[in-house]
Length: 399
Image 1: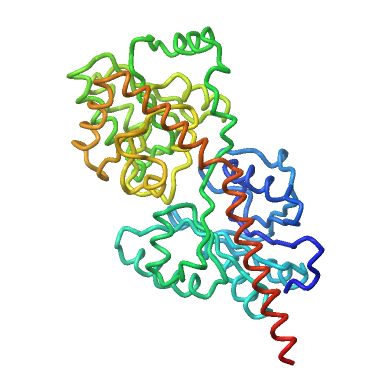
Image 2: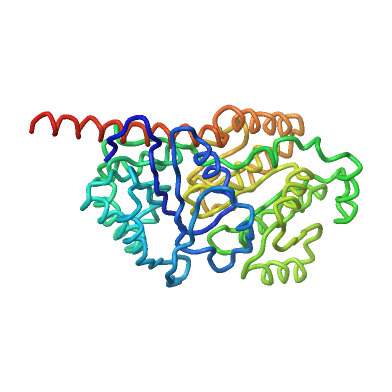
């Protein structure tokens, strides 16, 4: 409960792992004049993550002792020490990243018991309709309706939480964003650097490069993209396909290429952030064919790099980032013909392709920078703490 209006608002933020996508946001929040932020991580990383950024964190944080249970694509965190941290931390506000593990659930319940305002930061969108998805909706409905406020990344998530029963007045949008400075200016790369990089890849300038960035797993649908690319090659051989990322499907995809003699397909494996930005810089079209993603930060990166986008309708970011016919095309999920037609249409007019790339960057610059995300968080924090202060004053006056 906030009593001293002049001091900083002490905020605890509980997040699953240390991620490069979130670090700029946390750094920005920690630098705000009115906020004193402490970030608690449930774990340093998850399996199949090769990020290594711990030594570069410049904000107050702690990786909680505990353990995690890997359940396929889902990881359940158990960090009992969060109970002590919430009780002893003298926080004015708790923000929990989701509500799907013991750590965030315990922090939520305890905050309610000791009357600390709590905000749920949720990227949830409508699920697949499976039994697990429906169960998640029921559990989620309890938590989100009991929270003091919710922070969501965009329209799709906003709509989903309203369907769960959240009062729209308690929803705050803080768009998912990346450090656009890493991708904004492709001209930072000299033409000679780009030419040398393409030469290293045996990638001629005249070929239109189609880019995929992400894990090579079934949910991301890289096999669908490869199938469509092989069909497009029969119509247009001036194209190339680049897979940036790694995963269990990599060997299978390479085997398909070898067996069917599909040319000009490049598999980079995992690359660091600097190298990834170069792949964006040398590419012409970005494709995000995912079957399901709550957002899709790689779309932000591609747009900041000035690329036109083809993205699945089941990506959480699509409603906010992809304006169909303006900066790209929205395709049906897991639909090869839809993807084929979008790529074929985009590649048929190079000027339109370039103009769509420019539109992508304009959209990012206008509304999807880290500063926009920070503003969304700050609005939620100040609204809830002010509301708590007013309610506390009313309560004391009644006494």
